[in-house]
Amino acid sequence: MTTQELVNQIGLKPLSKFEPREVDGVFVSDMLSDVMARAKSGNLWLTVQTHKSIVPAANLVDVSAIVITSGKQVPQETVDLASKYNIAILSTELSTFELVGKLYGLGLGTK
Image (tube, rainbow, N blue to C red; front, side, top):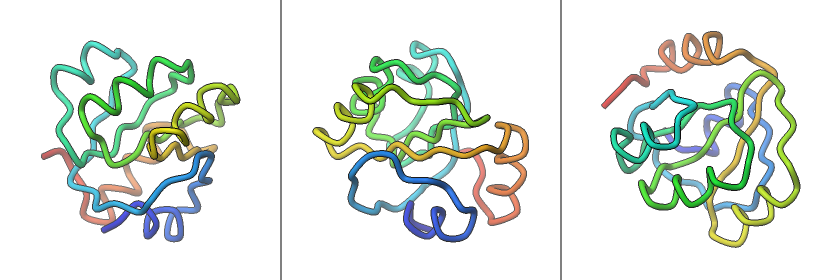
């Protein structure tokens, strides 16, 4: 499944410019150090963090996309930085728990 397919199927809202990528698992954490240590390349990263530091962490790990949950507003400087490095930032009004359920229902889990 690709990031674009998830946008279409779940109704995620793209905030940054990005090229669709394959999604290989899901990682949930709001701690950047946890993401950098344990997320895997190709994971979809679910978080409520919105500051620009999420972009270098996502780039380091090579996640397929960052999904901001719970309707959190993302600062424009974060979106601009993500667009510059072709990192997808997607958003949803769903809580992290609700989104995990939908992703699991689509066959995505941790890898």
